[in-house]
Image 1 (cartoon, rainbow, N blue to C red):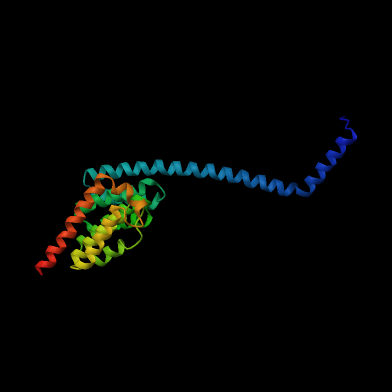
Image 2: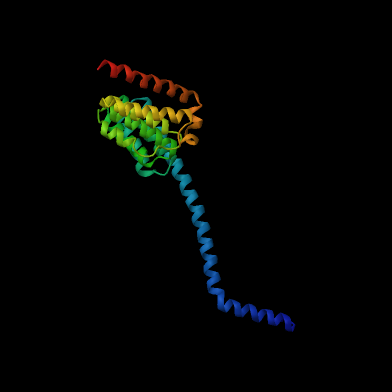
Amino acid sequence: MAVYDLEEQEQIAALRSWWKQYGGWATGVLLMVALACLGWYGWQSYLKTQNAEASRVFLVLQQASAQQDTGRVKQAAGELVNQYPRSQFAALGALLAATTLEAAGDAKSAEAQLSWVADNGKDAVRGVARLRLAGVQMDEKDYDAALKTLSESAPPGFAARFDAARGDVYVAQGKLPEARASYDAALKNLDGNAKDVTANSEFAGSEPGQLLRRLVVEKRDALTTVAAGK
């Protein structure tokens, strides 16, 4: 039998008293921490499995797109957005499906795919989807819908592109003053004179940014010719 001195006995008594008072609470905290850890690892494992399954469906979508099999494209894209909406492949798959369907002349289905990405995508992907969606709506002569698509705050780096796209919509509507104002706003962003300088500086200095600037200048200057001819 173990023999404890007086000091050890006092420590044991104090420990027993503490455990009696706080033991249940401490056990509950430890249990919650353990469950949280298990939940986190379980969630990571779930996401890994989801991404693996989503990548398999995305490959099917790519193959169907290459073969211009619009039926399989719709089926695979629908599976991605319905079963794996958190996966990175869902938005990419919807964009690919939209391209395939638009090329096949199915503008409405393409619009549905782009609308999903516009609502659920992240940052740059969402910005691309909204620009493409507005383009499809313009082709369908649904100008009000196109302006609505472009009316929300642009994702970082997309302000100038959204301004330019709005200018195109206004030109299609014959609203030349509004078009000029939109083109001017795009140039201010690209030239670094607007509030969104930080968001647009990287794009503005790139080759696509310089190309967009030249196109916007040409479109804005063309408005003067159009107005003079009226």
